[in-house]
Image (cartoon, rainbow over all chains, first blue to last red; front, side, top):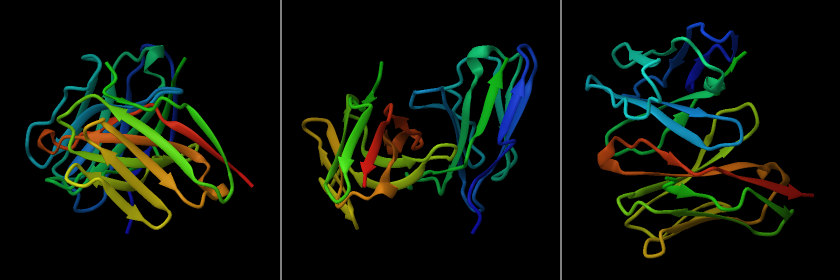
Amino acid sequence: GAGVSQSPSNKVTEKGKDVELRCDPISGHTALYWYRQRLGQGLEFLIYFQGNSAPDKSGLPSDRFSAERTGESVSTLTIQRTQQEDSAVYLCASSLGGTQGTQYFGPGTRLLVL
Amino acid sequence: DQQVKQNSPSLSVQEGRISILNCDYTNSMFDYFLWYKKYPAEGPTFLISISSIKDKNEDGRFTVFLNKSAKHLSLHIVPSQPGDSAVYFCAASTLNAGNMLTFGGGTRLMVKP
């Protein structure tokens, strides 16, 4: 079956512009996660959706970052007024949720803010 | 405050030999641990996991060992193959916290033919 897909694969934007990143999770996966990987670093947790529960936004670095999820399908991560330090690879993952800890990742969106 | 640490940024091993990648953690609440492998320009790929109720899990050439008292886990790859060359991330989660993963900084493994 299809894995997690993300779009766009690459995005170059100017400082101050807004960007929207999309994630399509694996069908049937109730949990969806966003992570960020800056150059040369590990992955940082951003936000987590589980079913219809309120999302866990504890990892979002500032109020310029927000995310939405439609039911148990597509999610969009929005970064407003982008800054150069937002440049990173943004990774989405999904899992079956509950006690199933294995997350499956998409290929990521490489964001470069000039 | 890094809760998961991989102290070796890189490791070079000869083909056919054993690769040992190490990971330390500080949060005693972690109860599930995973290793991911990442090739350039791709997302991380799940490799192997272990629950805190076990001290060893094996899958083919890959074995993960967990030492809870030392808060240490390791990934053994035997025998190492050139195709194993990638960045390896260890990750930890707390099942009661929605399984969000806390990652180490990664170790770049290079397997030389």
